[in-house]
Length: 131
Image (cartoon, rainbow, N blue to C red):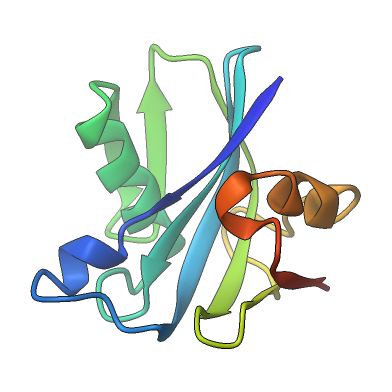
């Protein structure tokens, strides 16, 4: 199964993404083909559900909020939400931290995540902390 990271930082920072940033993420599996971490800066997504909504809309998946902005349900697509958490990225220091959990979606899958992230060419030289 392929693994990738989607980062919505460029949406929040259209004039240039800062090297040091942080936010929330959702960890999901799309079908049997792809596992993803979808990162979004705090300023862009107050709730983990807003990250999922943006990902679905950009990729043509239907969904709806079932409790204000807090719970988003994907409709008619094979997307499994593994969990969520928080992230802090320092591109200057080559450090990425993944931690915490989502109140709604629960804890992300920690096991093997560091190796998956470091297996991506853009993160191969990063110090990745997963907790």
